[in-house]
Length: 150
Image 1 (cartoon, rainbow, N blue to C red):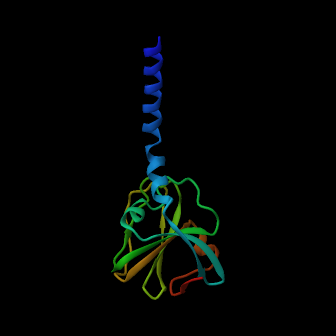
Image 2: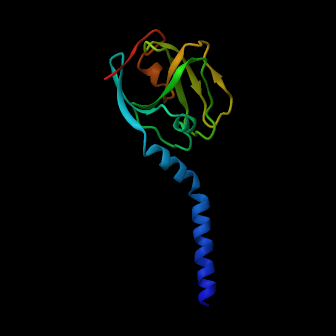
Image 3: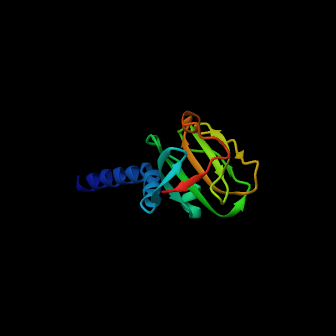
């Protein structure tokens, strides 16, 4: 009887660990993410800053919710032609590609869980800012505008 009970408990622990793997990975990275505020036009947004390869690769994967006026700022090591997809990301997002002066070069859309690659037309992208779909349009934020850290 005791052995059967121990086997059931062990099995339950294995199942819990298996299904919580994604959550553990997400938590292990998000615990180390810096939060900052950006000024875009007349609007202030709070962003998670991801500047390490591991956090950039994870991005907003597995998130079901992004609060209003919040986003994720990707910082790259050097300017390049950026490409993004929305694999394992159930959120509909807009992405602004930004140069080293903080100028928005272009804005594109990312559909939920879409593995289609969206590539910037410019090879001068040093930053990318993901916001909820429609955020840039709703706030009249367009290419050519500047983004500043508050």
